[in-house]
Image (cartoon, rainbow, N blue to C red; front, side, top):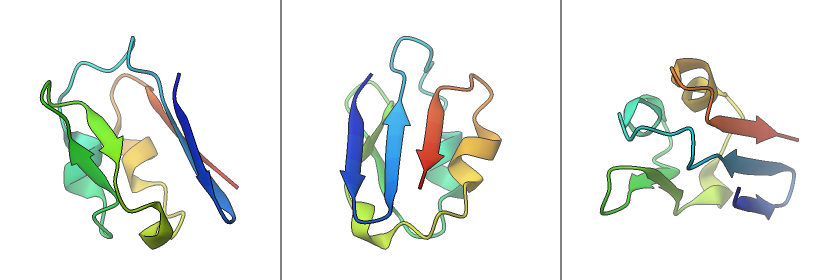
Length: 68
């Protein structure tokens, strides 16, 4: 499970659980996530993360965690 950390927040994405629905990408108000070639999220702007957890809350697969 890749873990991206910078400053206060880190985002963990479990690619085995993720089905690539892109809901986390759509709900992120800060454009922190971007779809890869399979439609799965990847962190591209972690410095913009506000820890709102909208990505985590809307993930139907529980594949994404945002932590302080």
